[in-house]
Image (tube, rainbow, N blue to C red; front, side):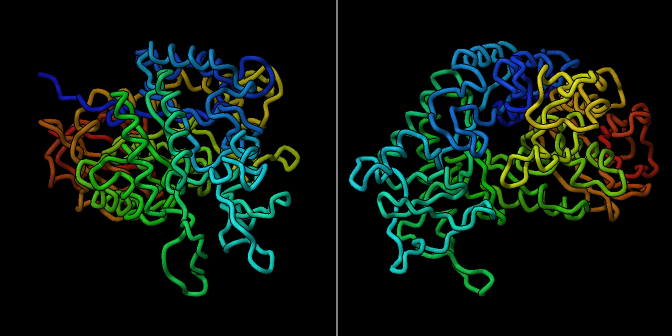
Length: 533
């Protein structure tokens, strides 16, 4: 009998994040669109090892929006912005993806809307409008200042309150003033968002990624946040409020009525013990609480191991871990960990770590090519938080045009000088390329019960600078060894096996190397997978 590879798709699959603006443009306007994603589905998974092999795509927002925050300011939850296409284009994308066995997850932005959403237009029209309480409104203090000391997540914005002169009250916005926060204490808001979930579920989506899932409920008394710099302690009122768990349980109940669907949430909390609570005590909230741990660690084996071990120890019984290396809000791995030009070597090793740990890997578009952050000239910068460098378009071919196969027009952000050599076409048939490494990893993972659903056990005998662990299921035993140093190093694996076969390495020249009873040698920043005898 073969290995047991069964498990929910969101446990065993690789989820690939697509930032639609920057994936593929089909109409020459320089901005990616839904039809463009459809044209690239075979690249993502055509059922053969010649494709990347991902199992699901997660789409960043494509809804109608003024684009003050590039789609995270939603003006209509039930449509598609003309910039990206039409609802028919979305339906075609879902149909084509499902035909290839690719699940479709969409971003849901329930904490706030655009200030141009009809709900908010009504809400701000008068104090007695029926939708007034759909948003968080409050009177000024006696001196006319905002109701409390809450701040926007965007430092350049400052206070999280804007005065509406017409009605004389402030409204809350956790991000831009153009993104007013919904009032999740209002039952009508909860019912309306249930309708949004059902709309997309009825169209065939396989799940949702909940944007800032930890922020939906606020302190109803709107008390000041503690001032950390002044030594004050206590809970914050603008995030991680206990009522948010009831909201997520309701979301989960809606999904359960549709069968095999999933929900993951952006839980950007510095304390992992707080983050894992978003699975729910009975694992009845998020299926996956997005774990930002690798974005916060230095390039040190001990730090990475400690972060993984802590996450494993904190997970509620029955909960499933997940990991990612970067996304549309954070610097790319090649740039973040570069030290004297070794960013690509480190990114290759990080790929092995991402795809061999116990849990669901989340892969951001372009990561499989080893894309770096692109310096953006001031006159081309758009984002208030400086996130443009990691959002630049995908380079698909070697063409000398500014679009590099992404567009026939002028791309909305420059692709950077490296696009001529770091692109899909240049890497597709190169066995030593980053793309080939990701393909081998993903397809190898599909056939390995140990990697899909097996146990995780760190190797305590690993030397300083090496993060090594065992993945085991039934009779399959794999050793993963990751050298986080810039020097060669040896790992004594004698405590776990006398011999083994090197299955995969970041050094493509070592693919046929056999592991004997002697120590396992690792090159600088090298990662390996060894099948133990």
